[in-house]
Image (cartoon, rainbow, N blue to C red; front, side):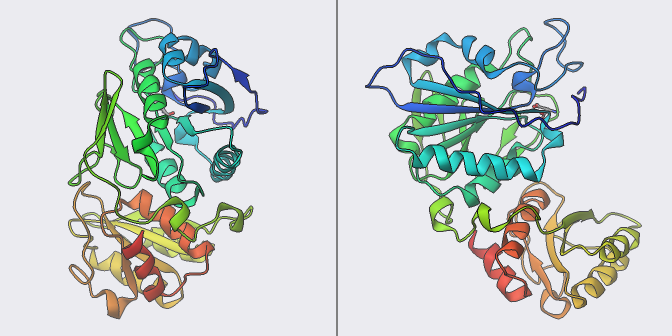
Length: 355
Ligand code: ASP
């Protein structure tokens, strides 16, 4: 898909009430950040050569007049980025803005429109850092707003409907996409082009929203939002430097040695199978662990969990395992854990076993 400008625009908070207000309806803030849902292509059948994040939130809302029947919506253009260019500074801005809105007493829930590429990372970051039990729902689209059969308008309507529902309270951050409701912890993008692009492998969706009816089939079990010790404010301007490396046939130690020399605080390895690691790469990672770099084993497979001491001697090597988190979500948790002062393998394993 065509790239938008790599420059990050955090626009001035531009608040506009876009629906007539009704006191019976929930008050939902829509925070727009860009992505394909705000993308535009030269013609209606073009779903690959478009620019992401160029359509403003006012136009996105105007395309869904029935929003006025489900919520009193106010909108803000927080950023206009292709989410492949998501920046840690924008995560900080977003998390703090969500907290401010939900603490105000004038907002019942938040919807965030986002690109699909890094949606699962932003969603999990917010799931761990937002300090409110009010609903926070991310949504996106696989087709630009200009496309014939664009999926953004219905995804947006469903996300606002979920954010305004009583059942969504206390469930942590949610993703409403293609009629399903997923937990931010479990959901991943699983397709490059399909409209049904998000799934929660092995675990499944929490529920669905169909024709305006929100139905949850299960609840989120692990602690999130108000029940975590992670605070975005404690991170400050400098996020701990954590990188991801991958294991594969013939893997070398070049990347790990370069990262250690650059002073990274943590490395997540996307291992083969049950987080198994090529011997050459494993030796380099064990040496990095001995120097105090946090090493987390995850899997590149895409579903299933990585079991401690299953494919490597984690105790002897000083490694931590990621459980069901994919490498990119494991990186989010590792950054937050390191920023909160968890540095030993035992303390970090406890964090990964808990959140
Ligand atoms: N590159 C786009 C983005 O992540 C893709 C999308 O939104 O579907 O912003």
